[in-house]
Structures are given as C-alpha cells and as structure tokens.
Amino acid sequence: MKSSKRAATSANAAERSVQIDDIVAGNKHATDDEDGTPPVMPTLTPRLVINALLGIALAAVLIGALPWFTKTTWGEIGHHLSLVGPQATLECMGIMLLGLAVYTFTLSAALPGLSHLRASIINVSGSAVSNILPGGGAVGMASTYMMLRSWGFARRNISTGLIVSGIWNVLFRVGLPLIGIAAVSRSTDTLPSIVRRGAWWGGVIGLLLLIGFVVALIRPTWTAWLGEQLDQRVGPLVGRMRRGANKGKPYNLKHLLLDQRARISTVTKHGWFPMSFGVIGQLALWFLLFWRVMAAVHVDLPVADLFAAYAIGRLMTAIPFTPGGLGFTEASTVVILVFWGANPAAAGAGVVVFAIFTHIAEIPIGALGWLAWWAMPKVGVTAKASG
Image (cartoon, rainbow, N blue to C red; front, side):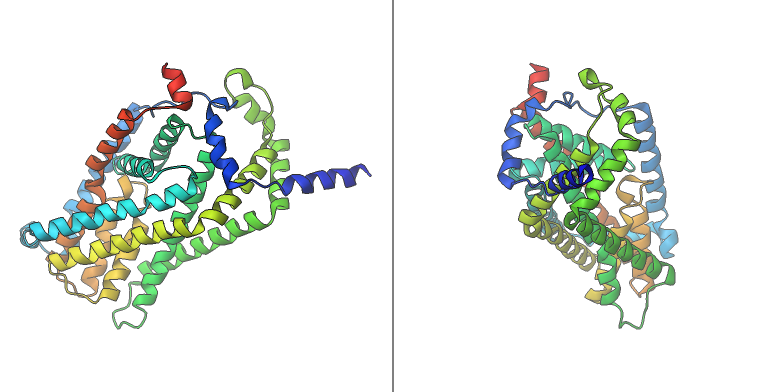
C-alpha cells in the first residue's frame, strides 16, 4: 500500500508542468530566491590572465605559421589582403552585425521576457570574453548570469535558458560538418580521411545529444529516478557545499531536476522555432560572410566546397586551447581550401580576414556591450546588494 502511494507521488511529481507565463512572472520575484547570493563580476585571477596570454600566444603562433601550412609567404598573403577594399569591408561588416542581431531570437526565446536589446548586450559581451580567454565559455556564461540577475531574472530561469540555448547551439554546430560532407560527397576531390572522420564523429555526437535531450523531455519518470539517486548519494555533500544560512541543509535535487525538466520542456515547446531561426540564421549569415570574404581575396572554388570548409572550420571553434579555437580554425580551414585547389596565398588571406570579422571585431563590440550594461538601470539582487 505504501509503495503504491510512493509510486503515485513520484508519478505526480514527474508530471510537474510549468507555464510560460509562470516563467516570465517568476523573474519579477527574483529578489526572493532563497538559494542565491548577490551576483558579482567574474574575478580576473592570475591563473585566468596566464591562460589568456598562453592561449593568445598559441593562436598567434598558429596564425603566424599560415605561410608554412600553405607553402607561401606573408608577402603573397598580404597582396591578397590588399584586395579587400572599402566596399567589401562595409559589406562584410554589415553581414557580421546582422549575424549578431539574428542570434538574439535564440536568446529571447530561451529566456522568456528578455528583450532583443538586452539579448544583444549579453550576446556580444559574452562573446567578447570567450574570444579573449581559452575555454572562455564558462567565464562568458558567468558574465551572462550576472547580467541577467542584475535585470531581475530568476536563477532557475537563467539556468533553463543557458541549458536550452547551449544544447541548441551544440546540436546545429556539430551537425553542420555532416551537411558539409554531403555538399561535397559527389566531388572528385574528397576530404582527407582525418577530416572526414572528425566531421562524422561530430555528427554522431550531435545525434546522441539530440536523442538524450528528447528522452529527457518525454520520460519524466527517468528524470525523477535520477534525482532520487543523486539525493541519496550526493545530496549530503551538496548540502555541505551550500553557503550562508542554507549551509548544511539538504538540497532536493530530485525536485530541482524535475522543475528544470518541466521548464526546459515548456521553453522548448514555445520557443523551438525562434531558437532554431536564431542559430540557423547566424550560421547561414556567417557562411555568407565567409563566401564574400573568399570572393574578395579571389579564392575561386565551388560554393559547395566553400561551405564544407566553412562547416568544418566552425567545428574547430570548440577547441579549448585557444580563445574560440583561434589558430586551429584558420589552420584547418586553409589546409582544406588548398587541398581542394584554392590559391594558397588567397586562402591564407581569406581565413585571416574571416577571423577578423568573426573573432577580433567582436571584442570591441563586446566592450560596448559591457558599457551599455553598466549604464542601464539594475534591479533584483544586484541592485539590492549595491544599494
């Protein structure tokens, strides 16, 4: 009898649902979060500074070695760089800004109640941090969390938004190389075997993530079972790690996981289209930018080949040893372009210009984002803490 009651209680808990209006309304009471301390600016530690310098140095070495990869010289690459005139520069800048703007649809859908203006601020600010530090995604995420809390967003809503938008990015970005392989599958100049294997593994990882995500959404009883196991095995440890008045108190991980599953399900149900539009739109505009850059430096290859090289280059941005995979992305892309017959000097110039627009240029734009956040009114726990 008791086991039946426990099963019924577990089933009822697993069927927890959250409405989209509840998520938006919850942000208005973010100051009442019992388990949060006031968010603070991510600390710039000596370790972060050293990692940043080492990562930037490694990226500089790899980019400096582009003539070695392409069997050419910086003088020849410089000639093709000089072909990028003012008109092409303005065109590429416009495409880049449009790509940054369209991604705000993903962020606004993943974080209900977030305006496109504020989505733009956290997008460029987080990207700037990620483009400076190796593996800077974690610091960029911490910066995003702090900004959202300063605008009154509840902790759990922020967690949901970061999880969903992160999954959406991974799914599309790791699947992109598969599309690139398909685009050149009928070409006589096939991909090098190591590149082909890497691209296929990227697609397999994306497929496994998609399966896991779908299972987590449609099988809440599995989520409840996982929460129970975590409560039994690591619950006391989590309680000892809590801070402030809650230190030592057990944390109901089962309830947390079920609540997050319900929130993720609701956000995905209502926001799957704008989130997909934002990610696909940005990736498409980034390829348009790649294509126009290559045309400006006189790289003459079929569009399908250019897309495959671009797709595999995007996969390389996940390498954590340099900021945003800088250096590794350019080296792998230029090797593929030259392998398919592109002029080596033109290909070297093309990847440098593309890196300037998609990596370097985002840093000063991100600084403007930080300035805009600093000038905007603050609410929630940050305002309370600073008052």
